[in-house]
Length: 484
Image (cartoon, rainbow, N blue to C red):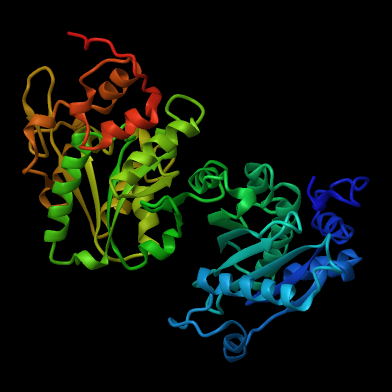
C-alpha cells in the first residue's frame, strides 16, 4: 500500500471542493507547493479555507510579472507564457526546490507534489475567452519517482471572476484525483468535472506520465475526453503522443481524410496521395504551412454499439505506422468539422472523400436540427475557403465510373449541387489507380476476421505484416481458402 492512504482510513470522501481539499489537508503525508500564474491563487485558496493547510501547503506563489517570472523559471524563447513548456518548467523548478530544501531523512513518509497553472482569462473586449495549462508532479510513494498529469483547457464562461473560480475547482479536482483515483485513470478523468459543467470549461488535451502511469495509453485518454463530452476533438501524432489541436491547426492550411480506416486500404492511400497533390497545387496553399489529418468520428468508432478500445487502437496503430496525424472528433456532419477548423484558421480547408460520402452531404435528414435546414449547413460548409477533393466510385452493377459529373443527388438538391459544382468547390481526383477501385475496408476486415487469405493485396505495403504480427482486428493464423 502506498503512503498516500496512511492516517486517512476513517475520512470519507466528500464530493464538494471543500471536502476534497480537507481530505488532502488531513493526510499528513501529502505536502507540496502551488505556483499559479494568470488567474490569481484560486486553487490554493480552497486548501487554505478548508482548514489544516499548514501540513499540506509548503509554498504558494504567483509570479505575475514576466521579468520576475523569467528570473525564476527562465526566459521563453518565443515570449509566450501560457504554454506547456512554461508549465513543465514551473513544475520541475518547484519540485526541485522541495527536494533541495527539505531533508528526506526527516520526511521519509512524505509525498511531495508540485501543482502549477499558467492561464490567460477573458480579455476586456470579451473576444477571447481565455485558456490555460494545468499540471501536477507528484509522488505516490516516497521511494518512487514522480508522476505527472498535464492538461490544457479552454474557458467557456464570459466573466473573469467566474473563470477564476472554475480554475480553482479544476485544480482541486486534479490534485484529489491524482492521489485518490490514480489507479483508475478513467475515473480520475471524469472527476475533473466534479462540481463543474461542460458549459464552464473544455478540456481538450491530457497526458499522463511516470511509473504509476506506465500502463496508461494517452490515446485512450484522449478518446475518453471526446466520449465523455469534455471536448469535441482530440489529436495525436505518428508517435502516439497527444497534441493540442489549437496549436497544431492555428493559421494552417488543413486537408482532412475522414473514414473508419478499419483497416486502412489502398483506396485510402491512393486518395491521400492524389488529394495532397491537388491541395499543394493550389496557389494559396504552402506545403510548409499545412496540416494533413486522418479523422475518425465517434460515430464511426461506435458503429456497432459501444466503443471497442482495442479496435480503436488497432486503427490508430496502422495510421501512425504510415506516419499520419490522427484526429478523433464528435462531428458527425462535415459542416461542424469545417466550423471547428475555422476557429483556428482562415486559410484553405480541404476535405478528401469518396462519392458515397459526398452524396450523403446532400441528404436533408442530417440537417433537421438546424432552423435553416440544409441551406444553413451549406452556408457554413461552403462559405469558408473550402474545397472538396472527390475520389471516384465504380458502380458494381453497371461498372461505370461515378464522379462529380455523373453522380446523382435528390431532385430537390440538383440546383444546389450545380451551384457548388460550377463554382469549383468540388474537384475530381483524376489520377486515381483504377486497380484499387474495387477495394473496400469492410470486405478486407471480414476476410481478416474469418481467417481467409487474399486480403493482404487490398492493403498498403507493410500494413498486412503489422496486422499479422500484432494480431490486429481479430487476426488468427488459421486461414481458410478465399470465397469464390
